[in-house]
Amino acid sequence: MLQAQETRTVSTSGPEISDVDALANDLKHLLVRSESELQKGEVREHVEKLERWVESYRRGLSAAQKISDNGMDLLQKTRDQIKLALEELLRLEDEGGNPPASKEQAAQVEQLSSAVRRIDRLMPVVEQSFQGQKQPEEEPVN
Image (tube, rainbow, N blue to C red; front, side, top):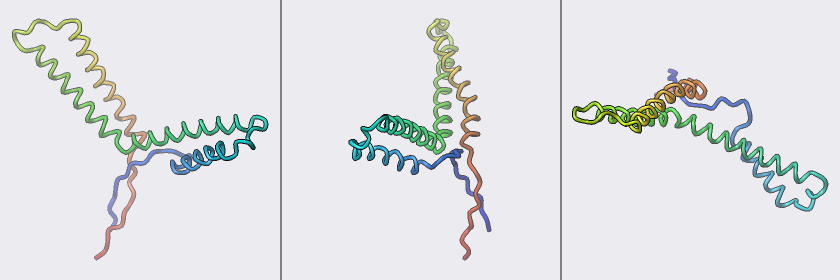
């Protein structure tokens, strides 16, 4: 029997994070261990620039993987917490006997509302960009 298991993967057509890590380490070692050989011409400058680019790319892949693994849950939890804060602020504002909302309170309500709307617009984009792919997994046969 086949059972579908959902895994979240980052849609990248480039190298894996481990490949980029290895290249970044190789370039760092090259800069340290071959310092005298790299002094000729612009070689050192090019290796340093390439190392910076690879390191930046590696950080981007790492961040994308973290978003893929935890992004939707974190967005949902953050949205829920902001929405609760907004509801509490509106509840206190609506209770009898309270003075009308000040400009500062109205601005705070608008900021919280805006944050919830932005997260609502962002969630489908993140979900689509880092959507889970169904992969069949064989169930052990007894």
